Image (tube, rainbow, N blue to C red; front, side, top):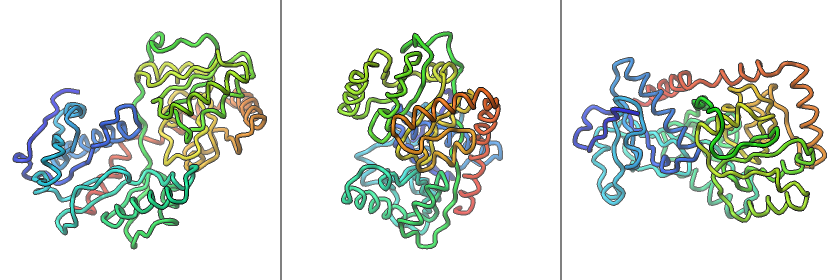
Length: 366
């Protein structure tokens, strides 16, 4: 990106919406791309209408990540803990994730828009205490918010069932499609030796990747897993399971890969899988849709809402059931020409459209 304009607080006159991009500190995350895409597309739309309204509150290392004419407020942790001059002309503070922190104290002049991505604590293997603590934190943010966005209808149902929203407006705005890079001639991280099943995301228990290992009993395929290595014990367990089944040589856990390599794996995989126990949306699924490959998803949380009829679903994680779903799904994919329908479904998630939806929400708060 070029010509991004960083600023100090003294130049903020007339700027009215601030998007909190603190979580862009985590580069290999869906939240990083959520903030980046939302910010770029909303700012593009507002500037096309000659509305110079948006600023980004960013970690120092992300000051040049946004597109031309974006204005960034550099986060200064110690200074901003006590003094917040960048809020002097703020009318709307957009907190884009429910586990983050909201800077503005209660102030009639500053409205808060809170985006909630999930209440996954309800669907993961958490203790009752952990669930209570997570819900209590989100409840406090809901109480400070003036309006709420949920990124799926599933998420909205969780919010209304488990939190007190006080009659506040709840909008549902799906995420847009993250731009997928042009695939290279061959990947840098790893070149599969066989047809391969691909999956991606933080490698941890919630993503449930270990349930895919029995698919490797089909000796013709391998499994490629890309994403941040989040839980070492879980990863060790995956490798031990693969060794016990005699398929260790066909399980490839790569860690984070480049955007270009990710595009290569999506373009060349036999199928894309996401057996996750809990998703607020399922951004990797929409990325995979761009390539029209067969999709195999857990029938959990938001995934059926996103995949609809163009995906195949694991109703449980029994190895025999998953192998049957995979075999029958691959056959149906070939028979019924699903690739075009999958691509068409992916095209329904455009950031241009979602940015317009967010702009309409901002207008209700200004």
